[in-house]
Length: 485
Image (cartoon, one colour):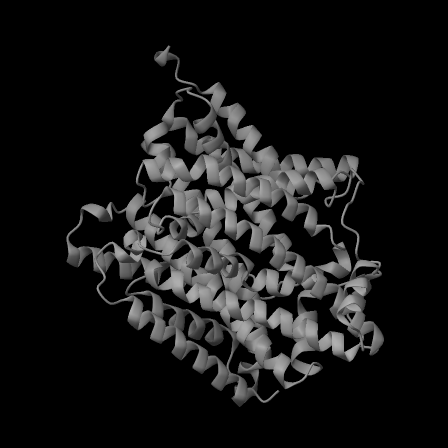
């Protein structure tokens, strides 16, 4: 597909985002950037959150990973649904009752200032890596599809994307993102549906035959009962619950959108609706993955293989869409991946800015002029951090989604342990000990996983988040404040 045409499409899409930003930023207050004035329609928030969670990772990684991991990811999705129910009926009431802007303020209320700062810091680290890795995938595809043709280096491509995101988010932040995420979700889903339809026609299949081809394919294996495998059902299901709670319920990025809803009831409706449609969307992308491999098999398209396994699976969907499916599919894919590249970072930058300014700079007590200055400085700072992380991982291969969840297991594990301990016990702890616990437990989890793999051929997989959280909880019990009894 012509690179100039693709560039025009991207710029047109960006123009629409700027138009949305213009209307969303009218009649804004100092708090609009952080809370959206708590007036967002919950239906819009729910639909938009789908795009934020899907991002470029689900869009590209999940279809590709089917060739190496079958439909085992669906076990993880089943666990997610249970996690969203916990968020709906346990976490949302806490956040609304305390009227939180930064959700980590809860930790100060429950444990103390050092725990509060530690929890926020772990979010900042995890979100920075997660956002950077998501954007890395999208930026690589845009580099291949567009910017290579203009001899623009990769680092400049990333800078351009970050600058464009800053232009439509810096004024009203989350108030704009609630609406732009809706558009991004629409284009992400449209790209998947268009691709499925084109593959169906290319293979001369009816809709029932398409469904049958997917469900009877050798990759359509949903359950893995091999206990030593990282894709074992129980590991995937339990980690699906815990990672949903951690990466959605304990994530300022996702909860900040939910907290823009008018009240607790609407926020709960938002999470339940979002979880249902997200599960359907993830199944859609898994089905698309099977169809991509069917297409490659029929038309003799050679894929990279090493030791009998597909490698660089993230390249499958982009390669077929841009080179084999025709103009309509290429346009829809470019719109989808552009939406993914923006949605993966815009809300993350807003959440990072919110958390840092509220948790470390006490911005809520500053003057209006200082609020604006500090907000812009922090927004710029985290943009620079994400840029540096992308450059660090720019040569990585394989499916990014596994990397993201692995990193999340180590960084969100202590957060999960803190919140579970805080919610389900009344034990007081020595606040000063928490930072050391939250640093040591991920290291211990990593060492345990290494020992299990090398000595017993047993991979914790995504279950590292459970081990991490349990170790954190046990450590908190050991440092309970005896003076409280």
